[in-house]
Length: 404
Ligand code: PLP
Image (cartoon, rainbow, N blue to C red; front, side):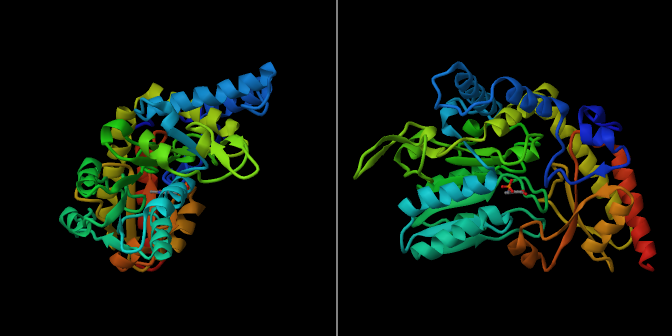
């Protein structure tokens, strides 16, 4: 665990900037050369508009896109790969569900339930859907150790609840939720179980089929892939009955003057020219992660997270926020007495340490913790114990600089 799990030289940015300790992978990860190479190879040998041309090059683009869908679905433990829709990422995936499924299924008097841990991407779309529909919007609160209060959640999920939306892993605290238990609560009343997997897929071995969720969203850029690509896995039966999200090219079967019929899944939900470059890059990213092994990734970053949490908590004036009782991933959120997180992150930046400071797109959570912001360090497979040491030394030094 002392060294990185993979060579930093696999990652061109880290190789070009040996002075950096990049501790913001929960926001976005660095990219291995193999992802960049796959994109270059695609543009060199297979670029054309897919699904549209009768010529061979267009066929190559179509094949590259389809192969990436199969690779990503396989990585996610999804047997029916056509139920994995490509989107721009978690945000678009959750908006797709709240808009297409939500408007068709949530009515006045229904209830929509989320948790206090949610990123705004899994909070605001459901809140706005409830407001539009005249439905009740309820938030399951947390226990003192930063876990979702499961008894409280069960009480909120009443027979009129149509959807329960929850994170697999919290981006702000690092809490790992008991997804199967949450699914059981949702399904107990026939509600849709929607899981935000943005912080889980890059870090855990995830089998979406085994989790039993109805929908599962994720982002490519947090898992070594490019920005602007991600996806959502949705049960086929739900996709069949759900209206399209966006209308345009490729998602239609027949466009009449009066009526239009829809293409088959997944095309029904992928209007317009798709992000083939992104899909190809994401395909290369999951090949890289699968080669390393997700169990090893998880063990490595959990070790670094636990070490960082222990060492930071031992510093005077530093409080590490709880992450659901056990520290089971590489996200460590903390506050330092007398040093605003933004100042701290600038001080750390001057020493080459990249961390996140702010509300982490989780204002409802921050309000409940009575904090405006925290500093968050997040570890990944290219980090090592030296990164932890640099962080701890710099945080200790920052307090001294502020006169403590
Ligand atoms: N959900 C969680 C838990 C996240 O951490 C993030 C990004 O930080 C998102 C959703 C939104 O992801 P994206 O910006 O890639 O759409």
